[in-house]
Length: 179
Image 1 (spheres, rainbow, N blue to C red):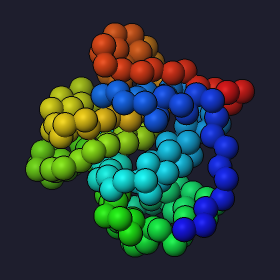
Image 2 (spheres, rainbow, N blue to C red):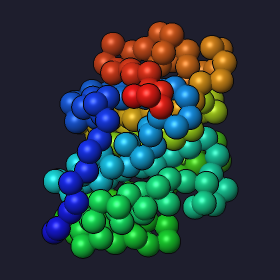
Image 3 (cartoon, one colour):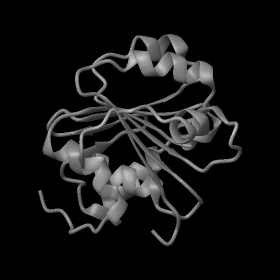
């Protein structure tokens, strides 16, 4: 596989260290989404992983990070490894990216098995109910929950859960465009 040399921002080092929660929050334009996508594609090329890409509501694939991942595959020269399909992205080694909304797919999320990483995008809109369903569902040994968001209010469930009072097993990083 011929890949291009990719330079990720310094804050991305946290994505390659084991932690139950990896949280990047801050203003728009900080490359949180692109960096999450690149890191997951790199990890998924090194070893087979199953990634659930989620957000609170997802009416169509256009609402997901499918396009972000697809564009990153092209930018990174990883097209020989990954196959982009309408609703999934798969790697030659068995890596799989699947996409779901949390709010209207509670039953599907609860039955998700073998998830290595959940990437929750636009997490500022995720409700306590969705977090309370998602977190105990992702229970594979060594599984991780990656959270990217642009805070709105200090009272939002995601902000309170991961910034105000983060779990002990969380790496939390504020990311802005200058980072």
